[in-house]
Length: 154
Image (cartoon, rainbow, N blue to C red; front, side):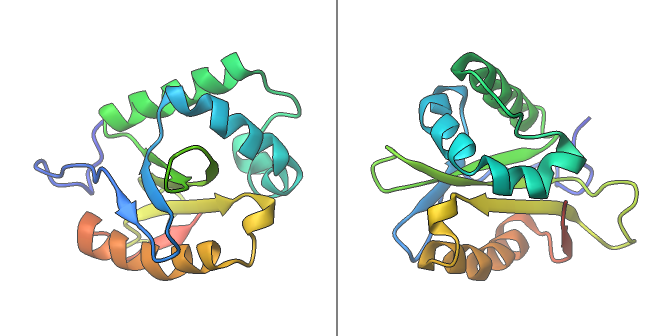
C-alpha cells in the first residue's frame, strides 16, 4: 500500500548530510556487515526501546538474518510503505544508527503525518551526532518530506 501522506511525485531522498560530518542514506541489504555490529553492540538499549513494540533486536542474530531484515526494509522503501535510513560515517565503513519513517499507526492522533524513530550506537549517545540528528531531522521531515507533524514512535 503506497503511503497516503506522500504525494504521487514524491521522490525518496537519496542522502541527508549532517553538520557532524555523518550522513543518512537508504539502508540496503548489502549494509548487513556494518549494521550487525551496530545493532548487537547496542542491543540492550535498543531492546529497551523497540523490544515491546517491534520485537527487535532479537537476542541473537546472524549475518544472514540481518541481511534478510535489511532486504525487507529495502522492499518497503520500493513499495513506499516505510523508509529506513542508515546513519553512516563519511566513508560508509561504519553504521552508527538508523532513522525510520513510517505512516502513522491507527492509534496516532489526527494530524500526525508519520511515525518517526531514530537511534545511535551506544558510544554516540550524547554526542554531536545525536544532537545533529535532533536538530536536522524535524527540518528535513518538514521541508523535504512535507511532514510537519510527527510522533516519536515507539
